[in-house]
Image 1 (cartoon, one colour):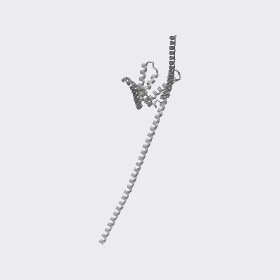
Image 2 (cartoon, helix red, strand yellow):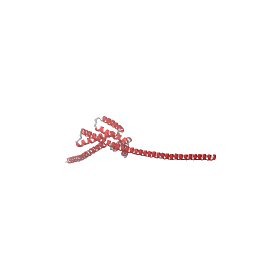
Image 3 (cartoon, one colour):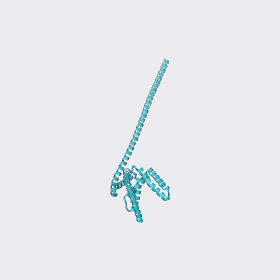
Image 4 (cartoon, helix red, strand yellow):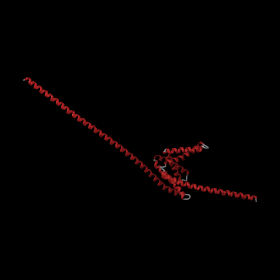
Length: 290
């Protein structure tokens, strides 16, 4: 009896422990399902933001991409130099911050990293079964689009962010609406969102370019008007100078004409006095003869 009682107590204790573990497992599963639900909602929101505002938020996306790439570089450095202790998080944090700052400051570098990571994410979402083919296609497509983004920056960023954000939002929305998620439904929703998002980004960019062109045209008109006003003022000054010169010439001509008339009068007077003197001489000669 004593042995049987001990066995019964042991069995009851094991059952109680299993029941307690089962309760903890249910609590953990409930917490996990809530976290997955929240993560999917966040993925839908972020996907829509990236899909419709990818080009406008390129600096922010560049910093985030720099953090991810820098963390990867820091992890490689930790394993390469076999750091331990506090050097591991410090090295990863320093590398992540440095690459994020450079990516946000240098636009071309940030665009390269954003396009590379987002293109890789697009290819990974296709779920190619062969892992080698998936990695090869992922690396090749990401590198190709990153290089093209250095040439055609705005169009490539618009297309890649539109597709990536749309796929993220579509797949997450399908998983929220249907238990387990339907991948093809997610692709369909993502395709529709991608078309709308890319069109929206191109429209916003065209309006931005149109505003810049209007500002530039207004500046050019103002510059041309200022130049025309300066030219008119210069012509007015030249005309005034010409009028002054013509007036001075007329005054000099009048003075010259007055001088010439005065000279002619004096010469006439001189000739008249000479004639009078000759006549006086003739009269004196005739008187002497008489």
